[in-house]
Image 1: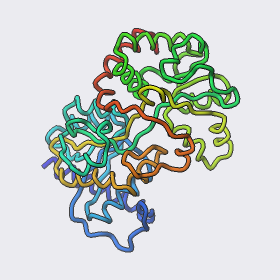
Image 2 (image 1 turned 90 degrees about the horizontal axis):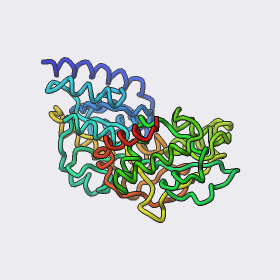
Image 3 (image 1 turned 60 degrees about the vertical axis):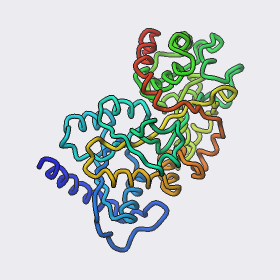
Image 4 (image 1 turned 180 degrees about the vertical axis):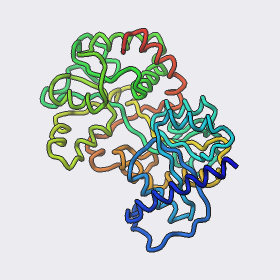
Length: 355
């Protein structure tokens, strides 16, 4: 009974959202002249908040007749909500950013294993869970940036180089509580082991220009204005600046240069936006069909470009702005390890004094 009542509630929310999006073209197409016949539902809990995602949901409905009912909130809040709803949860799919957050959902026991030949053939093995609990839908690289006018810091080519005393007083970063930094350190634990990862972390802390603070945007702007010499950000933040309609914003982006780390080693760290089917999903078949739709080439380009990310499937092209950042060799570490090493990474950050 509770499931039916909640489904009715999100149906109203879904219809309200659809009314607001009625004139928006679908991904790669035009708005339909008439509403499609609704033949089913899929209930999506998402921490992504992009208009392009909404257009994809409308296009999926146009193609399949399956209505997408959307609940948006932060990832941790959605995970907690699904846990509290228990067996009565109407959630079919959880969509969120960062493998570390997908791991939190996995640890909470709310994701169901999915067997899909379509997803396994389209998505590289390192960008999906080994047991089918979640699937990467777009990816971003966590890169080193520096001031273009000052030039590339001599000797800098890898993440490990950031611990070199030669860069003392030059590094600005986000807090250690940030999931992007946790996942990066988790990848270093995977490659080098906990002891060497802690030595690296202490070395980076010794090179801080100021205590960790702000967002990736803050780091970008401080490197652009020369407050800091070096920082670490996700590629889509810089792409947003470079693609901005505001000339002043573009100018800030143009003052920053990208270094893709470890091109002679294991490659640059990448992370994902991804989706998993919720355990006990009332519309599981529709949920799988929806995730498969999001891995089609046109949908992939639309989904990734909505946040200046990289598609996960071969053949789908990122935006011209993202392409302008340069090509790179990516780390093929399975993204599941970013979650598995999350607790160790947090302990290392704490011991090393990375606030």
